[in-house]
Image 1 (tube, rainbow over the protein chains, first blue to last red):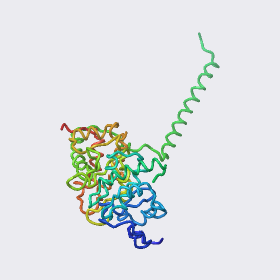
Image 2: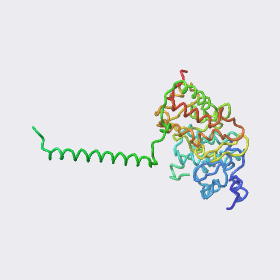
Image 3: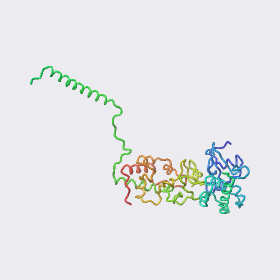
Image 4: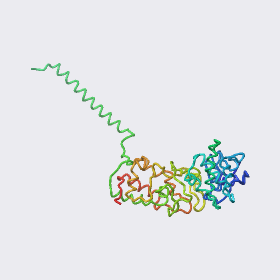
Length: 145
Length: 213
């Protein structure tokens, strides 16, 4: 992909590559709707310039798994977490990093990891439950984010 | 008992030779020193401490008001959440320090803070090394009196094992300098970096005295 190095990564992902799963929320790194993985870290693509991503691995919600079978995605489906759903690609990408680094998170770990992802529908309790479920799935299947 | 003339000559010759040799060495030494290019110069004052409590405490007034300004103190919080804004409120979203001071899980500093400031009012400021002090050495500024902060800054157990030389060098650390390039919508520290550095070095080199209070 060729893009202006100063372009926000989110623009490149959505408008140049055409992957629309990653959402634009606030545009100022405050809400978490635009989270993607940059070399495994949950960066906010609205404030990350394309130049920072050059030569690095970018994973969006579409690339988290080929069949929506990542433990976090499965747990999200099982618990039926989203309401409007707008923030949830960012929520899932953040949760995936948490479970990779802390396979058995406590409620406090979840709060610490997910505090930067805002859900205006207020699905926080289901998000927390789904992350615990995903941790169990990950343990059973041996898969990791 | 009379000394034999030939014995007297034997003593006289070595004395004469030694005198000539000494004069020769002296001339050579003086001549050589005139052409030295590493002749002693005034000793560097870099790490020298000229103790003066009045000068030291006076310099620390500038150091203290700078370090307690939001641009410095916001990343040296009393708790594990950084501070934000000119009123030093808790950072939105409540990011945690983490063991290395670089955040935790999906909430690492560099997830939002880029290598440079982002254009726009109150947008996330940036620096390649953005972080808080690590959990094992929190280097808290918030809530410290001038006396407490002065003591802490020179305590190797609380300052990252820095001696005077390293502390002086730290004035030019990238993150310290970032305080004077905070991004749009944020006030600068109360003095320029040059003024801060001058006061910092003066305080350290005059004995790093702590104010009474």
